Length: 342
Image (cartoon, rainbow, N blue to C red; front, top):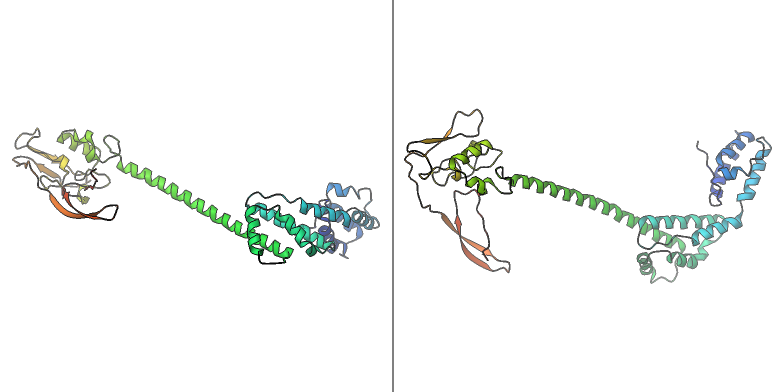
């Protein structure tokens, strides 16, 4: 069993003494010497000085109790202490769940202590409430006025109940705000990771800039043979010039010039520096594959002009009007783009 302790204040004395009487003083299984020992162990340093001159024995226990009661069981001083505590409530400048909770608990504590001293605190309602309102923030004061605007009378317990409800509301909002902020941090963090990942996907393996290989001027300025060699070295799919898959798994469209499974930038034509009848072997990136893709350029007839398909499309501009337009589609391209011409 944990015995109560006394901190030497008028505020705590009634609670301490009533508890000590119930647990120790009225325990008939304990001698007065044991009770005296427990009393000494429960006091703080300043309170212990009041009885330190007494020898621990059967007779002096009752004397120690009398000395302590004479020192702390002083209703006049206790009343002054509790009244001043109410008048010294800290000012709240703006809404705060913690500050309002401290004020409410302090008000309840000292009013209950005054009731224990036989004061009818309910008769002080107007004075207590009006004073406490001067310690509250303007938002809370306005809410109390809205709540009581049609009431002629109200009691202190109603006012305290209002303050407790306001505390609970503010604490609930604070919890929701903290959860929301954590969620926003997670979302922002996720967006940041996604952004970095996307940037890495767009990074050109040839020049390290943010574009695909087939948009890279450095790559396109190479000869066809050098492009093929560079693509092999970088382990790119020879059909779409992307990474992370093999030629056999590529679903992109094939060469727009010859229809074979390689990118149009890797296509050989008659203008390339190849002897007639010479063939260029374009190996796929597949491991353990016995099949090689052979691009045969000998006697190949090149087509200077390529016919592209068109489509009629409907476009709605920002004011909601519908326009008919003609779209030009490049079947050999990996992507088709739509842009606004000023």
